[in-house]
Amino acid sequence: MSVISKVNGISISNIAKVNGVAVGNIFKFLDSDVTISAPSGYTKYQEVTIDNTKVSETLTDFPVYIDLSDLSKAGADIFDIALSDGGDIRVTTESNAFLPREVISIDTTAKTGSMFVKYSGSLSSSVDTILRIWYNGTDAEPTSNSTYGSENVWANNYTGVWHMEEDPSVGSYPMLDSTSSGHDGDAIGTMTAGDSVAGKLSKCLILDGTDDHIFFKNGGGSHPVDPTNGTASFWVNPDIAAPSASEYIFRVQRDPNRIYLSRGVTSGNLLIRLGSSSEFDTGDNIPDSSWSLIHVTWNSGTYYAYLNGVQIDTGSYSGLSGNNSRPAIGAYNAASGDTASGSATGFFEGHVDEVRLSDVVRTVGYALTEFNNQNSPNTFYSTSNEIIFT
Image (cartoon, rainbow, N blue to C red; front, side, top):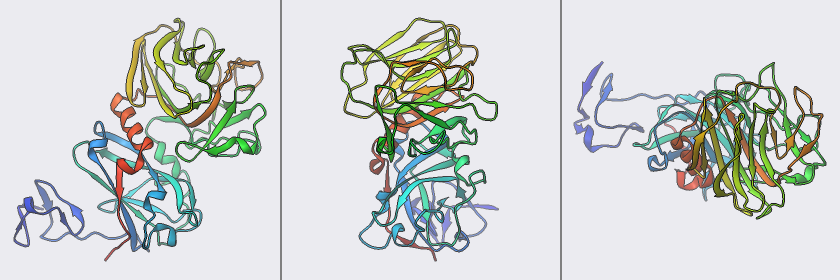
């Protein structure tokens, strides 16, 4: 393999692409041409170009959210050909290396839907990244645990991911965990199909502030919360500006090993309680009637809180060394172990979407990039018209 400075007599520094592949300052080629094969059976795709200025820091194996409606075009597009369940959709890098993806929803008639793609490797904060969305093959939905299946999208230290997409009234544990951990959520209270509505990303749940909450199970003997290092994140849209009682957004474990995230009485501020420490008031209000993205991290005595990708608080805590109950969204549930029995109080009234737990501490750059991506997808990236691979 040789290093060259020109392709067909043209300086590398003066061209942007060679056979559709982006080039930079120094490149290695086997010869003066680059041969890239399309995925077997596919010839049509659309490109998604991620704006590097929206990526706060270079991130490894980052799950990119794609609002499929951004691929709708006046001419031919993905919705003209893709299967009705999106099972044939495949995603690659610009050099056609496959990437794991999870199609959350798709409506080929309304030309809407949502999908996550794990950008395997480094998502650059200095150079735009291009994804290719292929859709005219005959492949069916890949199995969830396959290399490029939905579970592998979340194989970046996620211990639980709930898109809040499901009908809460259907069966036991209807709120599905997209990771391989199996920490599905049980809908507790008087939840109906009508509580599944349009959310921040796709669908979400409305909690009534009276008895509705989600109680997650331990899967395969594992607990979804790591007490030593972890991150909890979720989109919330409260109904009440000034709660008359504490509203628990997230609760896990019992005294003295606990993580409580709630909205304060009257203030509506984000309150945090970790381990055996007293409650911390971040001083920042979680506003009603609008969506906010919350991240809280903990790491051996130090916590950080972020609101819409901006740090709002940090401090020290003590305790938090073990697990003895399952996490809940939307209430303080006093149950322990692997049952949903026990009294519940402090119900949250409002909308909840895209709940995630990790066993690592996510950085402020990670939190801000998630906010940029999910809050305004069509400014995080741009999309192309249909491209025919030749």
